[in-house]
Length: 313
Image 1 (cartoon, helix red, strand yellow):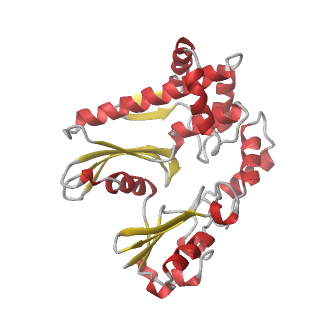
Image 2 (cartoon, helix red, strand yellow):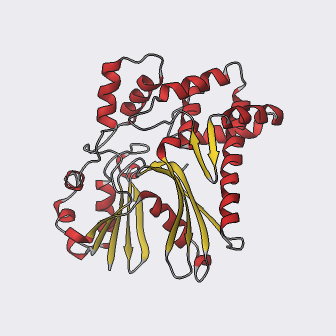
Image 3 (cartoon, helix red, strand yellow):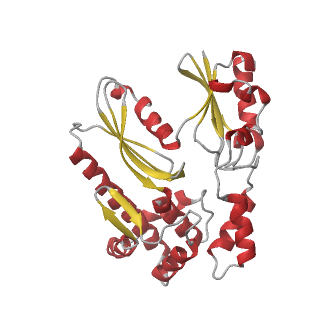
């Protein structure tokens, strides 16, 4: 049995499983030469089939790694388009008309219907009907943690997923039972994403978000501890915490939010601060906030010492 897996968002990719084992996987950027390719991985899909020497008739199932593609209604979102969108959304007093137009292109009010999404792919996919499945984005992250190790066999596991956003969520806590049942414990809406704060700080420091966050992580160890703690305290003030769930006081990344307000608060917070101290404080805040949620998750579930993490933040 062949299963074709498709991720058609940022860093799009495709993979092929044969009888439950991965036989080939590749990101679209490797074939197009476009770094962090954001769109439909048509070349990657073709490469999967060619690697195994099979035709569409031999593909039994097709699985999409999200309910909705993250480039809805369009085959491709260029890096320059996204950077232009970010610049006009975050800069002070953006022009209302341009801002509305960019939002309508990159963040439509309605999710795109499946037929529209499939229209960008070879017709053989749509022809498979019920053999085409959409899997909730964070459930896919759960699967990578659960099945990426053989430790889960016969054990109850606590699985925490954290990323930028996907299908309306930015984090989940789940219990995978020994019998294979997944029991969701909590979900954090994408409007309260830690990763968006990380992205905004990346922009503030002059780097490219969704690409250069790792540079901030690399600079974090060079910050002074006392300054990192002071900055982390300020960042944590952006959130409220209830049980294991966190919320941004000013939500981001939905149609009813104003990212500029959050970005401006960060600009004021970091004025005259050293870049390495900012990076250290950001990393410390993220670590302490997430680890606090993990501890609460452990306290609620008697699962020994088994914690699995997944995501792309």
